[in-house]
Every structure is written in structure tokens, then in C-alpha cells.
Length: 340
Ligand code: NAD
Ligand code: WQD
Image (cartoon, rainbow, N blue to C red; front, side, top):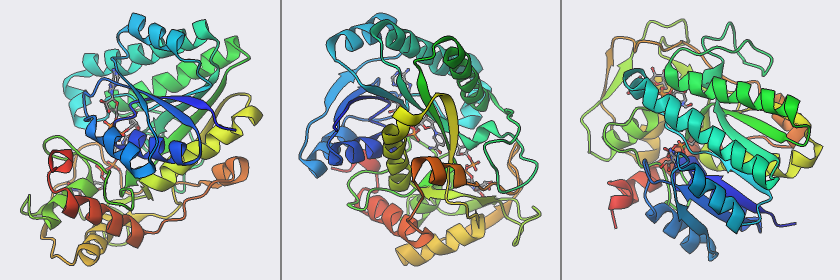
């Protein structure tokens, strides 16, 4: 049965793709976003793609009264919480802003949920909560730690939710630990739209392919991996969005707070990603090996079997599909949503 879902951060990259899949599956969507790192154009295009409408509140989670009023206006069944700041490097420079935005924002959301009796919660966590993993593949049982303020906000929010679950037995909370989301909806109408210099590999690679930047800097080729470059578990954003729908369906069976890895279980190196992107775009992608980036680890990939078992979810889109869809979005919208 269709549910009314509040999607915080719904105008952003992963949130917008999830809104589309929610609407396609017959759910109603209320988006809360302050547009700090997004534009309303993403939501306009989501509505155009599915022919359904979204209720949009341009609101900051730091505005506790505004958040409470939104809950008073809409009878909500569940909350998907994507809103947050996510740039690792920036979080080292302005940690107070990250703690305030991500932690205080989440507290306001949880307080409003409690006041209005909404107990179904799906949280955008991250593989960053595993810090420097001892081995791969990573299961949900691995030790948790953080290596930067951004990661610490994710870990703290997880801890807050575990505490709230102990105090409030009605809470059903799913922590989705994403590995490396890439790709775009296959229409090429919505995708990732980084502001300024991209922090992540694939948006950078795609901007080189389309001619916006000269070359990719490969951060180190002396890791203990098959070609010496960093290995990550890249997952198609549509698979990730569908993971949220699977979690929503599974919530009635969830008790307390449960974490799930959302990854494919397969790792690819930086050089393999550059090659796959070159093939999909039919462009040459110049690249140059530079020093390691501080804080990076060699190899990260998921054991996603818990999500398969409990949520009946697994990623189905392969690397070629991820790169083809990234390229369709990048080539049709070279300047992101500013391209009309
Ligand atoms: P994004 O920046 O595209 O989306 C986040 C959205 O939240 C933006 O639209 C932004 O405007 C909004 N927002 C931020 N602070 C807000 C506030 N105080 N009030 C209201 N809205 C606010 O990022 P994304 O890649 O779509 O990531 C979504 C979530 O997933 C984030 O919580 C992120 O930390 C998490 N995550 C992302 C990745 C990744 O690599 N993209 C990996 C793991 C986890
Ligand atoms: C991938 C690989 C780099 C850029 C980050 C966050 C993590 C999560 C996902 C939110 C690494 C290499 C990168 C470049 C490169 N986000 N690289 N040249 O570091 O795995 O994860 O995003 O939760 O918390 O830390 O992703 O895309 O930055 O890097 O060689 O210009 O590409 O060294 O091996 P990462 P990434």
C-alpha cells in the first residue's frame, strides 16, 4: 500500500533518484530541502519523468519550528533522511558547521517525529563508519570508527539512533551504509550535480570526458591492490534508491535499529574506472598518477549479504551500465542542472 514519505534532502543526488522510485512505486512524497547543495530543477524533472507531483518544503532542518510545522501539516508514515553535508575535506576545515548541520538537524527531525508519533526511519549512513577496515569484504559486524568530522557525524547519528531505539521501543530504524554511489537515472534527466570542483572520482572523470577539465589525478598507485590504485565498491544510484524502497517495505519486520551495507560486493580500481568511463563515453580520458590523498585506504568493498537476506535486495546494474548512465547525464547536461 502506498505510504506518505518525508524525504529530507530529496532535491539532492541520491534523494532525487529515490523520490522518483518512490513515486513510481505508488508512494506519496513530501520533500524537505534547504537547497544548500541542490536545486529545485531536480524535483521538477523527477515529476516530469513520472507524471506525479511532489510536495516541496524549502526548509532548513536547523529550523526546529519549521520542521515541527511540516509534521503538523502532513500525516507522515515514514521518514527517509538524506539531508546533510557530505564533503570530507570541507568537514576538516569547518567541523562546527558539519556537527551543527548534520547532528543538530537530525535531532530536530527526531524530536518532531517523536512529538508527532512517526516511528519509521531510514537513514543515509555510509561505509565511512568502518574507518580503516581490517579486511575486505566488510560486514555490518566490523568495528566502527571515524577518520574525519563528516564520518564522525554519521557515526554519532548512528549512535544516537541506537540510544533512541533503546528508549523508544516503537522506533523502527534502518541505517543504510552506502558504499560509493555513482551513475544516474537511465533517462539522463537527473544525476549528480557537484558545485565547484568534484570531491569524488566519477564526477571528476566524467567532467574530463566531456572536456570541462584537462585530466584526472590518480591519487597513488602504490596501494596493495591489483594495479596499485585504490579499489572501491561503486554502486548505481538507482540500485541504491531501490534499496530504500526495499527497506521501507521491510520496516514492519524491523525491531529497533538495524544496519545494512548497500554495495555490490565487487571492487574496481581507479584505473579500471577510468578505462570503463572512456569506453562508455568513447572519449580519451587523460590521467596522471599523483601522491596519495591523505586519509585514503587501499581497498573497500561490501559484504552485502545481510541486505539480500533481510531486505530481499541486491544491486543488479553492472559497471558498464553505471558508466553509460553517468555519461548520458553528463553529456546531455554538461553544466548539470544549469544546462537548460
Ligand atoms: P547531496 O548533497 O546531493 O544531497 C543532500 C541534500 O541535503 C542536498 O539537497 C542539500 O541541499 C540538503 N541539505 C543539507 N543540509 C540540509 C539542512 N540542514 N536542511 C535541509 N536540507 C539540507 O548528497 P547525496 O550524495 O545525495 O547524499 C545524500 C546522503 O547520503 C547524505 O546524508 C550523505 O552524507 C549520504 N551519503 C552519500 C554518499 C555519496 O557518496 N554521495 C555516500 C554515503 C552516504
Ligand atoms: C574513490 C577512489 C580515491 C578522486 C568518499 C567518502 C565516503 C563516501 C563516498 C560519503 C579513491 C580515488 C578520487 C580523484 C582519485 N561519501 N580518487 N582521484 O574516498 O572512497 O569515499 O565518498 O559518505 O565517506 O570518503 O570516494 O570518489 O573520493 O574516491 O584517484 O580525483 O578514487 O583515492 O581510491 P571515497 P572518492
